[in-house]
Length: 389
Ligand code: PLP
Image 1 (cartoon, rainbow, N blue to C red):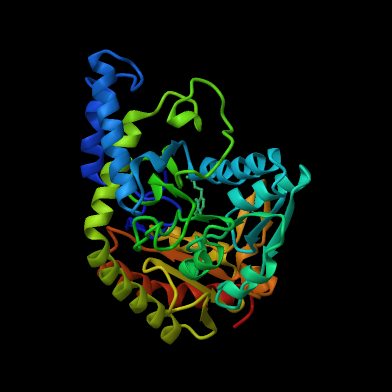
Image 2 (image 1 turned 120 degrees about the horizontal axis):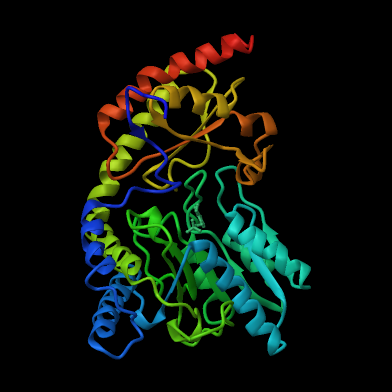
């Protein structure tokens, strides 16, 4: 490993460290409290009790009933379960095969939709405006007689745009199932599944200071979904597998902390976020903010720079011990343009000049100051190297 002078983490949207309190709460469930939650003897019952208490904490964060929470291994799985689960439940009773999604969904939704398309389901992809916002009227206009599901991401993992979920929920209420991928908003901004008329919601523990490998799908009571995994019938028959109790306990503890800290933490992060955005735009010519400033997650900063590659900025920041992310995803060796940044109207060159900095629980003002000190020099040097200055 390379030795770095700083250790500044600005990629909280990718994953978060486990909160030390969460870790401490989990530890006994790896050793003395190891029971299988379905077993009848006391080891099992102890695990079962911890499982149900944690389910309550997760449900509490979004105003759901505990029995409406299905634990899964990841939000990728939750999104698959929501889309495929509804698609197959509805198709089996001939209720339709049309699904509406947005053009800024996470790959776990877009790829699932693509796969469903290959199974003869019909997919409508809604456009967004230059801030990444969906117009609820577009949702209304896209509804057909055979529409069975609308799936709209709550907050973008790339540009942090928060969608008008409550307005969309009102349009769909009691007519068409409404799923939202709330991975980036869960535990960060208030969500109430009843007030927002959400029928299905995906969330992931590792984005909110819980462990990896545990997530959930909220499914409103009465919503029909087909399971993907068949077996022992755990999680009300919707997700067979022995439940990872230690991880669930961590997820529950993380939810409790987020609920308690949300208001204060949002106010703190908004100050840091806005200082960073304003500082960069003032100090670096040819720099721009991607997405909306108004409808934005408190921890998301996504910037773009003329004549610079985001990848090069990430490498230069890493040399200084700062972890950040780009607007492009390098998958299987080839550089792919971010579909989210393209959907807000950016040209490929602009997409490749984008940088995502995501803040979190341990981001300090002095780290923002340090970034503001080093970033202008990095951009200037990279422009000089590329001959663009
Ligand atoms: N949805 C969004 C918006 C995400 O940001 C992510 C993770 O990056 C996922 C889904 C997938 O979550 P998981 O890592 O739990 O599979």
